[in-house]
Length: 399
Image 1 (cartoon, one colour):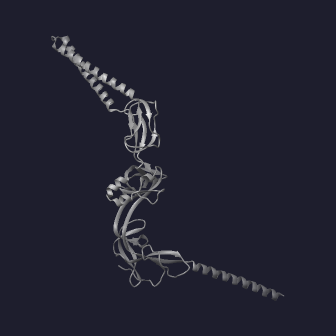
Image 2: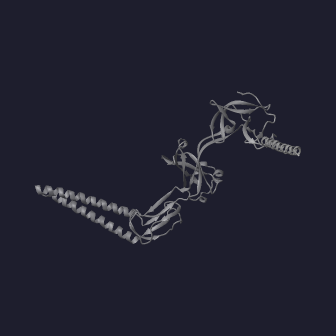
Image 3: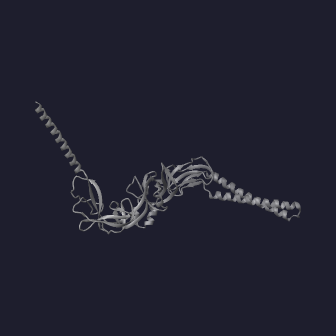
């Protein structure tokens, strides 16, 4: 009986041991099949354009607005526009009661005539005093009469100036440019003074965007710098723009230092004149489809280089200030090669020496794979591919 029980226990122990071994082997197999494998992506050195830029987000805002004011006092007779109305240059926005204006002109003309008469009388009195026999009393009288002439002359000048201003004034408020009314401040019957704002007008074709630029990048941004603006509502359209203002003071939020930069969107007409070609001008988007308040992304161009040799940033290794890339030779060997670099952005780096157009380089990529079969297609540059081995042999560092 005891022997039978020992035999059964032995079988159970053996079964458990076998299960543990099988489980261990399976885990090792799974780990082996999913282990990271160092793969390589082939890239071809090519020429292209390289741009360094600073980006930021903001909202479209109308950059050209103007308060339309009365240039004389009076009673508002009529307001001819409402908020949101489109207006043309020279269009009448509001008018004053012209009867009051005409009455005012008559009064001012009468004031001028009276001032002229007062001056003439003062000059006649002075002349009579000077012709009289000289005495201590008469000398004082001459001085008094001279003062009267001066005062009368000043009064005449003031009256003439007031009449001139009234003649130059208008009972009408007109639009200085094509646009739309953003605000109306008066109504018919209101008593207004000179300088009272009747309405506000805005140019719907001129926008600007404020963005925040970090303290690390602000030194590269200059007034007048070229930029583009892309509204979220029209992501395929880039509006030409320029940097119009850089705040001299920082905006600090939660310890982060930024500087406000204003970018003005250029009008299609100005861009067309600069481009001076019908085909390019025809590609300029209609500005009317953009509205105030739209979310927008601003790209400020810091530096541009055209027709330079480019390599992906991931292909470059730097040691002790020297940059290297791995170059694939004609006999499928890989060798390190020292290069000199120029400007760089987030994607590519300019190579100024050490490489030639058309050379093949590799970009190491660590990926998880279950096979070691060569994979083709889809490189970063035309003709590129991904491989892990595949007959490529490494050699020592090259020059």
